[in-house]
Amino acid sequence: MTTETRSRVGLTDMAKGVVGLASDATIMLRNAPGLALRKPTSTATIGSMFQKRAGAHPDRPFLRFEGKSLTYGECNRRVNRYAALLADKGVQTGDVVGVLAKNDPQTLLSMLAIVKLGAIAGMLNYNQRGNVLEHSLGVLDARVIIVDPDAAEALDSVPASAVPESVLLFGDVDEQSASLSESNPEVTDTLPASTKAFYIFTSGTTGMPKASVMSHFRWLTGLSGIGGMGVRLRHNDTLYACLPLYHNNALTVSLSSVLGSGACLAIGRSFSASKFWDDIILNRATAFCYIGELCRYLLAQPEKDTDRKHSVRVAVGNGMRAEIWDTFSERFGIDRIVEFYAASESNLAFINIFNVKRTVGFCPLPYKIVQYDGENGDPLRNDEGRVMEAKKGEPGLLISEITDRIPFDGYTDPKATEKKIVANAFADGDKWFNTGDLVRDQGFSHVAFVDRLGDTFRWKGENVATTEVEGALDADSQIGQSVVFGVEIPETDGKAGMAAVTLKSGDKLEPGKLAEHLYGSLPGYALPLFVRVVESLEQTSTFKTMKVELRKQGYSDVGDDPLYVLSGKSDGYVEYYDGYVDDVAGAKAPRN
Image 1 (cartoon, one colour):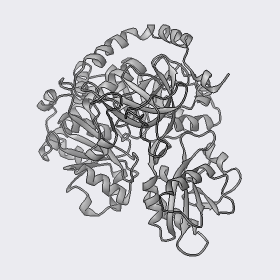
Image 2 (cartoon, helix red, strand yellow; image 1 turned 90 degrees about the vertical axis):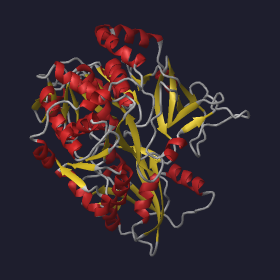
Image 3 (tube, rainbow, N blue to C red; image 1 turned 180 degrees about the vertical axis):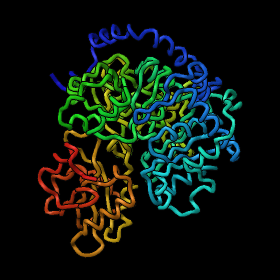
Image 4 (cartoon, rainbow, N blue to C red; image 1 turned 135 degrees about the vertical axis):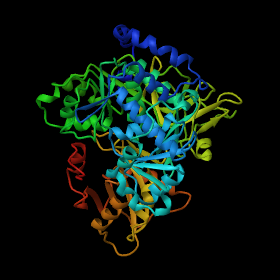
């Protein structure tokens, strides 16, 4: 039996899945109308949804952090005070308020205050530094920025001129809002669902991060679809999210699943493989949100009693590798794994509604899997100029139709938005969103994720733009030129970064100096794990072919070229050693 045959979804799988939905039928029926009938013009938003929950059940727990709970009513009053403060600072509908913060209840409450005013929460990645952070701040052009003191040092890496004039630390927000109104802002109930809610930064396929737009409408679609049809929480559930709140996995998937059901969101300060289940138990969680790397790291931990002493019955996320799916489910006793496929800017999502193994799930929205150009990631067209569907069983490029009911919110940069649209694909005037992802059809409108196209690879749940890493490498005084690409490491998710570099002078790299420079220039997940020193890199029309060849050679076919690997922040880069890839797979390297 081939891998492809095993990966297909069969009639038996679907029948079992449909039977399994019976116990959650009421939840699904309650959410189906919103998914089918909600329009961008409707006056429904994240803020109105939250305050309705707070009004109906003020004493239910809404947030839990390190075992301590905050109720819906308490949080809504606090959010309203924050909103009143922002309004006093001049924040109005359509303005941008930056949020630079680590995981903390106040991070989420700040976002809710911003969107209640019809303003846009610019959720900054606190790992960004230097010119990357400066670029992101410039994209936001925020009137105010709310800053977590634990993340404030990131601002020291950018010029003062790049920082908004009005900076509010968490303590400032609490102190200055203490005596302000606790009433719901009047504007909240007037906002259409089409209003922009927040900006999520994504690397995309260009050097600098792009700010993808999340509207209230698309967020509420996630609430009804992923949350209501897929996760299906009950009001007495608690969903644990330790992924960063600048990520849609936490901010959209986790929060919408909670608000849609009136449940509780437990915020983890950060992910710790050794303490994960302890935090789950402390916060009395019955569900959690994951990315694939998180699951692999949990499996790499020694078995212990807490593996099954928790109350988790459902996990939701993306990137669960097919080969660890059963092992993960059985070891930790998790009944349902709600794998999904989505992207920060995508206008569709696949959700594993039917609890089928090893799939990103089902999508009722119009999409196609098409043939593609491996060089530029664009769909291939036939002699008539039309896009061609991929052959059955073969990986193809996923594209999704753009309509008034299924809009593409795009990015803050109109040119970046236009690049993602495939026009006149199957008929004159049609428009499709190019996801940049390869998938394989599994039958019954289910797909399996295969890979990501273009100059972006995914590592530790983050999209890494090769041009951004190349820019950081080229800025080091030792480096003449660089090429960066992703390479596969067995038993890991995504692709690790590898760089081929030339030296400006001499034939010996100073690996410690390079590591120090890169740690100061890039987020940890973007640092290349492998650095290969080569004699030359052609910058001609065949440069892409050179890059393809280097990618094929990877770290196992470098000839006599010096090869260095990232050991960690203290040791920097060291000479390649046998067993390094096993150390990476076992989460033993790189050490922070």
